[in-house]
Image 1 (cartoon, rainbow, N blue to C red):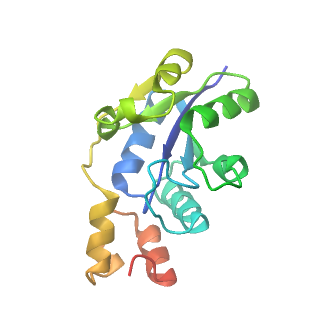
Image 2 (cartoon, helix red, strand yellow):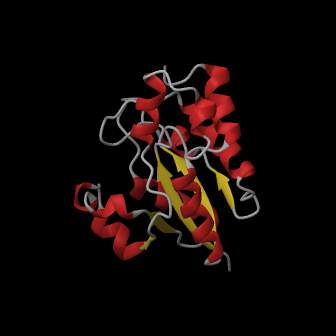
Image 3 (cartoon, helix red, strand yellow):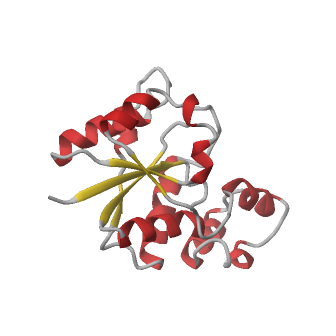
Length: 176
């Protein structure tokens, strides 16, 4: 039976730190399911969902991880009409039903500090478990967005975002 891990996040934009977690999980034998947030549970505003989906796809291709990972848009179909967020616990439950096995949750070190704020975090730990991996690249999407809004060209960020993602950001005028 395949082992799955679910890696959720805003991916706004996706960066090399995100890809390093995907790569490390893949080396441990997991198929990674990247799940961009449709609406952020803590109310953060993000670039449009379709752009974040496409940037994740481009990053997986650029990092040669498409055999080990895929992008999943399940949050769009689970999003309530009320505008409420989709919670990780619900995503994991729906994916368990689709996959026929229990996926674990892939998280980086930044999640540990806020874990108790997460909806049904105890149930996530008990039913699914967490795969906690340290980042090999300490990068924050917030910093990338700030640099872009300050006028830095996306192409100059090739040390922190895959080149096709930088090209996509430039082509669509994101984070200005």
